[in-house]
Length: 245
Image (cartoon, rainbow, N blue to C red; front, side, top):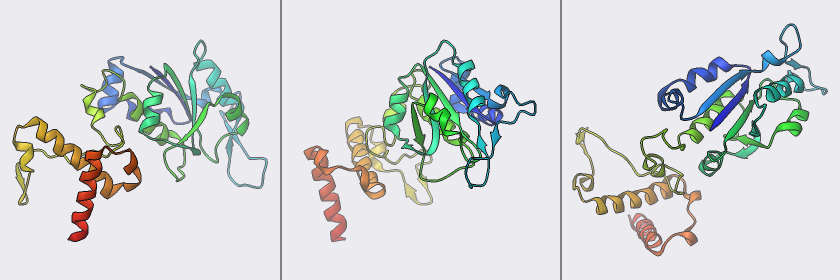
């Protein structure tokens, strides 16, 4: 997979993308990511990429031409899926991350100031994506969130696919609670089941704990009509027990 990020702050993006699991996978060539400074594609001798909007709104708006020139230059010979990260976009989730991980090439446009001239969105963007119902000063953080979520599902980035298949949201449930040494901390013990060595029972416990965690923290994720009979009975029994207490 190749990912291109068009931004006014390539150094900010590079700093994150060069570290930890993502940085190691990038260094190994498992995926390619390039950060492009939109200022390098302006024709303005002062490297300006913004101007005042045609409205009474205050602030500055990124111009279409430098963005378009950047896009055409870095995607020559490619047919990327183009994403504009924007608070007006569709909410980003694990399903979208899985979908994006199937593309060979992705181009992420990071806006700044009051955003970008809408004409360039109409010209090159395939979809707008938001990471939440809030506004940031630029698109760099959302773009990095998207890249991180996408590339960690590429073969070879994590040591095993199980490392992400058990995680929150991948299966529609939140992840079960996890524990490590010491066995006792602040008088709290690791659940005995995890010390039993009985893998089938541990898997059953983990699944049940995922159901509980999802019900307690994100009940909006649970569709009782789609649950298996076993899961539905378990959750109803759990809910009834809590009500009795």
